[in-house]
Image 1 (cartoon, one colour):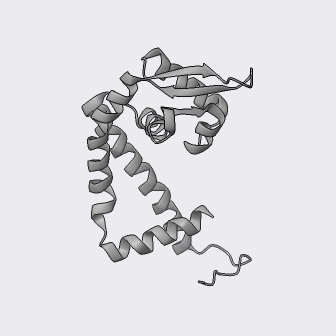
Image 2: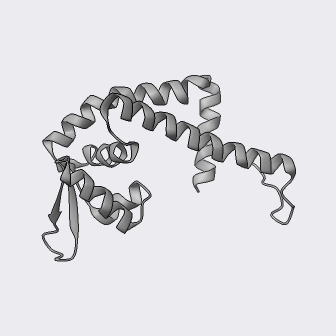
Length: 151
């Protein structure tokens, strides 16, 4: 296990620069992936992420609360996003069978087709803007670093 620095130690200018670079890189990659999807499919990245989560689930259906957690949105933020997707016919909101207050988001056939058409663009972007920048060994280390940050 790698030792971490003492938490009472001040953040150095170099550390702060690293942090700012990390934030900037995340925003840059996000913007590039979104631009690719918008340019080729008129599809915002947040819409893609929601539909991608649903396609991975049996019956393409997930409780709204679970979906919000997976895409890291507040419940109200996800509700607004799902409402827009529903207006476009890409997702349906279905009441939960046993809980009158709960809802499921369900990927429609039109949503599936939209996702299917956009997936190649998204994966090419992930490869071009992130994966392709590193060797296999660097990617293994990067994955470990990301897992450590996620903990």
